[in-house]
Amino acid sequence: MKTQDIAVLACGAWLKNSAGLWQGGVWQGSALHGDLSEPGACLALEASARALIEQAKVKGEGRSGVQAIAHDLHPDFFSSRLAGQLAAELGVPALAVQHHHAHIAAVLAEHGERGPVVGLALDGVGLGTDGQAWGGELLAVSTQGWRRLGHLRPLALPGGDVAAREPWRMASAALQALGRPEEIPARFGPGVGVDKARQLQQLLARGLNCPLSSSTGRWFDAAAGALGLSLRQSHEAEAAMALEAAASDWLAQVRGHLPELLALRILPPSEAGGCSQLDLLPLLARLLYTIQVPALQGEAAACFHLSLADGLANWLAQAAESEGTQTVCLSGGCFMNRLLSQRLQEQLLQRGLRVLLPQKNSCGDAGLALGQAWVAAHSLAKAEDSALASSTRCAPQGEESASTSCV
Image (cartoon, rainbow, N blue to C red; front, side, top):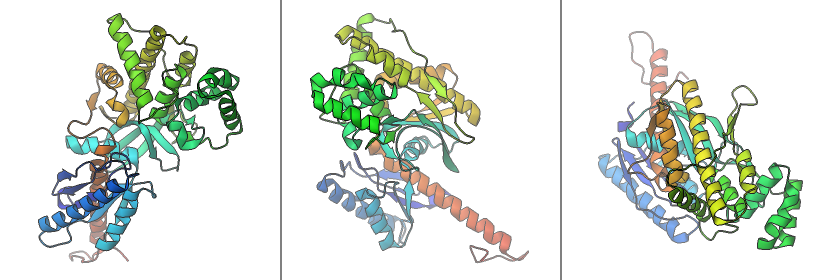
């Protein structure tokens, strides 16, 4: 069965939500609804979804049109609950698609590719299949499915979700991981309060409410906190943007001079079939020794960006060779960082790899629905083909079977 014969409604992500309809091999995205923490965005998503369902019926010439509804793996998102509700109303399946798989799938869909490719999805957070917060993911993706090949070394999120709003917490988590927790009160006490810094030190020591995450965004927060560029942020990616600005300003001033870079280690899987890890902890150790004056902060920020990009390029090249492909896909909100994106692309091209990135579609969560729909469409096509092959095998020789199973 061809995906052009399938109609899928995709309900998108939690942040920067947009939905869309995949029908006849053509993608139609909705307007941007915004973050689903806002009631107005939820209402707008439901209105868009129902309008797209009606549109699919018209195109389907009176049939139900939509054959599945795709949504994020997180069951508590409004978009996921809405997908389940609409699927029940239509009598079609609701298909959960892992967040970072959808990011890479969106690139394949936009470029008309089938894979296999190695994909790198870098963002703030997305629920993983193990129930943990992912965000620095190395994946193998094709129309046949996907596998997690590796991830960034996990870092604790002290206090849980609040750590995403307070970069000093992520820098403190790095100090704990480096075996230097006693430095937390002295380093961050003047900015956040000595008592609060000591409480966080104790929280990390006991491992209480400190879930692990492979999020790239949180490593950027840790770097910004370590350099004193951001202790608290009032909006998403504020710390990461401050880090990029410091690096870009320093590089513009030195005109082509590069800081001394650090080669990042790739930690091999601890067991057969496990995941490799790219270790950013030594890079944070270097930043934590930086004297906090603008020139040295800028140089250290540049070191972070360029060392990370080069480490990612080596990691991707190694995975591509292992997977037998020359094509890599890059997506996720962290690729809005121009310095990281450009350096990584240059390094990958120098290694002879073909690089695909989003063009018209957003690399952030606003573009996620396309990937959800692409995954769901290929999943339905694969299931239909398997059922057809099974019924053909079960039919007596010379006869056609009307059944889609052997039961």
